[in-house]
Length: 258
Image (cartoon, rainbow, N blue to C red; front, side):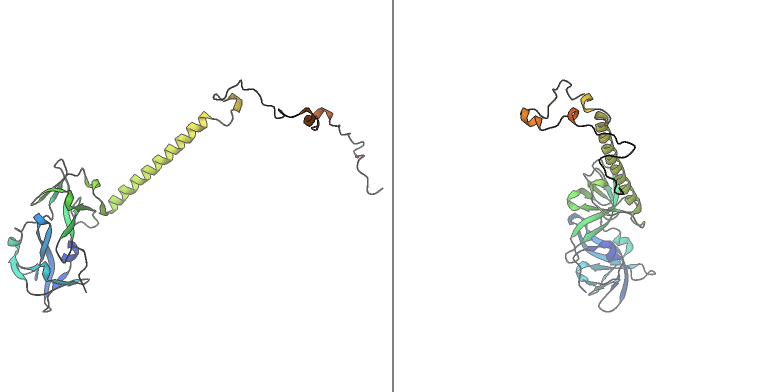
């Protein structure tokens, strides 16, 4: 088992910590980070629900990650919850837009386990503890200022950030927007066809159309031909008339029985 290239903090905290002595130190409960340089230094686990002490681990003590456990080397440093709450962090900080209005909450981040470098943060619109909430990717270059509990950006809204994971509500909103755009495109095409149909109705003769001149000379299809060539075409008045049969029998046909 090796360390992956990128890890989400929430996945790291959901694993139980097991040292090289085989002792279970409990699940992770919080991150130990250095906000000015956007780096994760370690994390904190809770060895027992009945004890007030907490185990603090450095990130370089992490050896491997399995589906449910974190394997570490060495021993942790014991601390208490009151002291750990004084450690500065950007998690659960309010995300402000260019006008200073709150648009979200910093809920999670993605980091490199070998160096602890934070690649980007994940922002939630509502309480991140609610299942199925959406996540937006906030890169470090979009941060204008940061203080404990407040992250200031130049964003106009969460729509300026790429969506990483969408909830059912966000999917419905996006699908409704797509349906609205499709209906608008269909309506525009139908309007264009109707306008063209009204300008050139099929029942109007070509000579009656307003854009066609009425004084155009008629073109003779035999114009430019010699008179000798015209004599080869029989006139309709010179065609012999067919004689009507007498008594319902055509003279030109023979009766096969006679």
